[in-house]
Length: 137
Image (cartoon, rainbow, N blue to C red; front, side, top):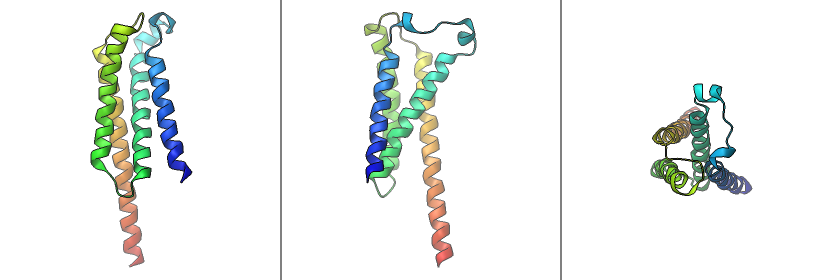
């Protein structure tokens, strides 16, 4: 099935996009008092990580016939660990960037949002299948 490979490809591409975005030199980032007021940076982190985890979870769902709750949790945890690692990359190897614990929290929130959403999708699909099976009987 081609769709599963497209989802995995999208996940890998998005991963590379996040690496690029999180290693841009600090002086290349837009600065605005309004952005700081509404914490745009944190919302960007939440969005980036929720999309990243969602895509990898969707890819996993397509490759396995049965749902893999442990794999889904592992993907979410890997997302959080990736966020932590990137903060160290920003601190030690990226010019004009620094380690920020609130970025890690935002990354984790994004991972948790994706995890909860995918688990919801799985439960909803299972409920639909049960309902369909009961109606057919």
